[in-house]
Image (cartoon, rainbow, N blue to C red; front, side):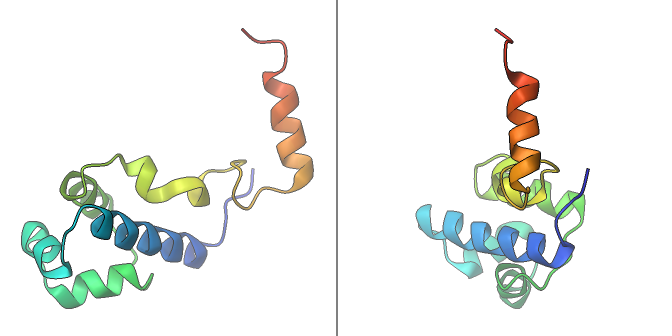
Length: 100
């Protein structure tokens, strides 16, 4: 299994944080207050420049009322749809074939 480039995962997480924050009508300052951090740190996260710790991902998921998997999206899943080669996608589809 191959995982995507960590920089790409950070960018995807940042994009999803921004998207979810806006969808919930939250400002960067409101998210920062709930995370007990600075607005600048939230900007850094949304820009994909932050290498987030697990506890920060959990806090973000709670603030944004979503699951961690929603923050990570397909970008961080090995063999997932994002970043997977066509051969890997095909192999994954065959694995599940015939299961009920």
